[in-house]
Image (cartoon, rainbow, N blue to C red; front, side, top):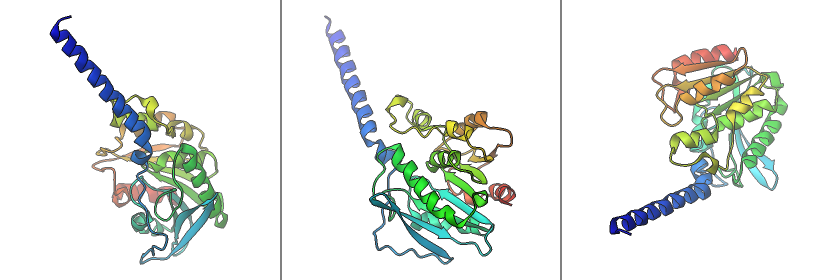
Length: 267
């Protein structure tokens, strides 16, 4: 065998081992990649200048941390599932955008986030936590007063929740088609089957009886708006997709077009 052939085979072997190592790293590290939990100490004191009530919700042997921000005159409740970064100390700062529309807004920190205990080790860990929090907070409302919201990583769980309940509407901000699709878009060199999480948003929205409203920025580089265009194919009559021109992934709550259209949805 010629020397260059041996060198080529050696190089191919090294590259194959490197690729296998990358795949293994992603498989075992994806929990931290998808859910990089930001923790707060158990005695952390939230400091907001507007009315709020803190909740500690039993979740098996663990506890879920949530905050209910109150509107001056309540028309209903927004049940909001946030993105994968930060915790309620920062997410709570967007509450006034919604309470000013006359809606209370409840925000949940996922297991391992903020003051919530436990961890997310599989899809069911998150879905169970979301359902538990929803069942707890909905007691003070009728379901036709509740709008389920999801942003970014929270959109899959929000769509799942809405497909298992009877809210007034489902609002998804910068959603993904599925985790496998998101992995394929973000890491095209990795096979989609490595994703331990499904969160098949496209399947969930097909089962949602309430109106589905999707908002996505056309300059989103975290989750490209092509994902929402794909989701549109699974709409029923009355569902809508709004592409926000010049909008990136974050701070959608400050977008004037979004606020105007959301006001019409809520009222």
